[in-house]
Amino acid sequence: MRVRVGLVANLNKPEAAGVAAGLTEWLGRAGVDVVVPPEAARAIGWHGAVATLREMAPGVAFVVVLGGDGTLLSVARGALPAAPPLLGVNLGHVGFLTEIELPELYQDMPVFLSGRGVVDERALLEGRVVGPGAAQNGAGGLLALNDVVLAKGPFARLLRLRIRVGAALLASYRGDGVILATATGSTAYSLSAGGPVLHPAVPGIIVTPICPHTFDQRPTVVAGSETVEVEVEAEHKDIMLTMDGQEGWAFAPGDRLQVRLGPAVARLLRRPGWSFYDVLRKKIAEGDRGDAN
Image 1 (cartoon, rainbow, N blue to C red):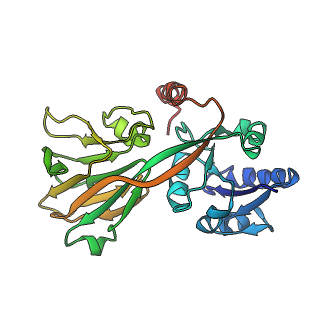
Image 2: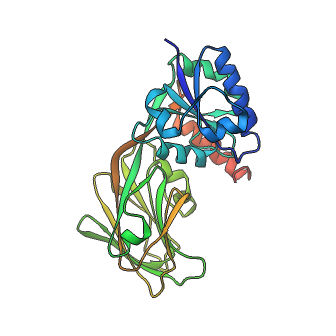
Image 3: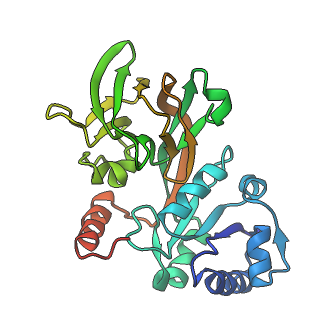
């Protein structure tokens, strides 16, 4: 039986179209059926199978994602509910989530085409906004692989946040906002704000204050079975709710954000012997040298 593979490329990356064109040709010569989204098909002059990400997801062995971590985050959400394995090829900088660097692409691809790749499942946050502003701002339902962030706008004054875990009050403080992150997101914005690094298999939610105007608020890891609720008081309406740093909505004072680990997962393809700790050591070192964007 022929292998069927999806191919998604971040066409904002200068080299993406060229890499996609070369890879589709190489896969075709290897006897692989390739499916490409319409915008990529136009960019590379592809005349084979064309389908949107959501349409292709249920029928492919895996999806090759050409881009950086941001591209992989977007594709992981867009491929739901089918959640096919995603093979990230790094065209960005640090690349915590992507698996292959561009020079390794053709030497490593046979590993995945032969079924020897290892699936790394990652939990997603599921959230909703409760209150009078929920229907207006379009944020009734949320999914995030890295984080959900509630923060003040660039010129607004501090927010007063009350954070509850279940029925218990966890924190009450004034500050710029809060990051609710998965273990996957522990190496992203939460890390920059002083949060801990978690192994991706840890089923927890990291609650990381953003610039709290106090000395007694520290990042906290909440059990994955709990629901975290955030309520904001402010004298202004310049408050933003963002998901994975890619989609955002206005958040109204008095609304409540409720976040938990949902049942959906992202499935990332890894080479045999992949180690999170090896990636952490190497990528943090790259960031320290100034290679991160």
